[in-house]
Length: 93
Image (cartoon, rainbow, N blue to C red):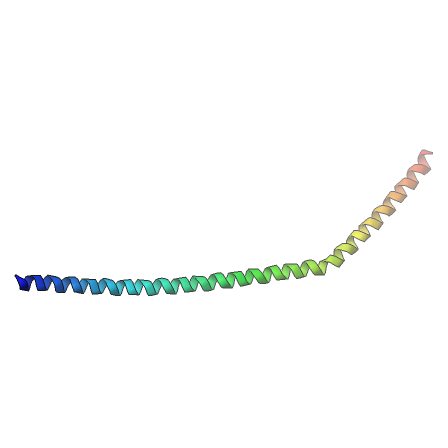
């Protein structure tokens, strides 16, 4: 009877050792997967940061162009208003 118990204990210990190895393997796989995911997230954040930096640089470069365009539009609008005003006073009076 003790021999039968010894066999059961040996089988259970063997299964327990197998489960420990599986757990260790899964833990290493999960750790590796999380490291890969962290690297991907970090590279994405770095890419987004670079994109935002490029957008700010573009905005800063285009401020002068925008100001010149607004000045040109204002001058052109003033000329159009002056011509229309002159034409209306000339033909209405």
